[in-house]
Length: 301
Image (tube, rainbow, N blue to C red):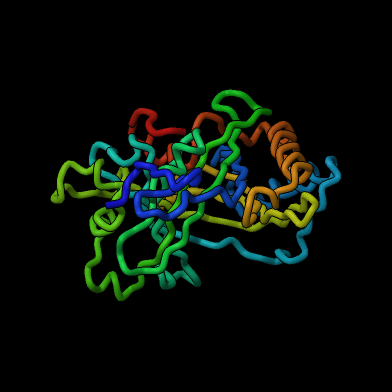
């Protein structure tokens, strides 16, 4: 049975089955934005101008030709939890995301199970792998976020993710999200019993409108695709939250050169100042969905 307990193999840390602990391979910077600023696709491009201006001021290369004429992508985002939010209260997130093309869902749907924690080692110790016969990807990220109540700073949140797909064939076999819970041993301790059902968080289906803005280049081969997103309630298109993000990927931490990371952080700090009128402090996108209908702030955010 997999779980949080870490074993030692000499000096090498492993999960109970001997698999080495996952390492961070992504640095993702996120800024939560006020949703009412996004009233049309032009609003996305207005924020893109601030990104370009900030990059130019810091002499950071920024390319946009490859996204010229691109239209926003639409995805449906659903969060699932117990009625008392047991998963989220223990720093887990269970999400299903379905992309749409020309008004129709495309196959397959993507399921993500996340454990998020401000301590990297605590995040790494949770074995997020499933025990179902399916291919999956582990994405372990350091996320940089603004402080809860101050513009111009940053804090780290480590996100340990398992990503896999559910095809339409699975749906036809009535593979419910409760089966996903049973497939991830790390989630089992937070369910009351095998019969407890999970449900759509706050009865809210999210429609995500996502537009790629360009690519930031931080030197030493380190680049990051930048995009901006608006989340709104699918039922009535009520704006819920916006976000700007960019992500660097590397095979090992030594590939993220110190000067590249420094430029990445400088851009993150400077953009907060340049776009201060757009910023919404105090939570993440997921946190805002959980706090709908007057729910209290929860989770390790």
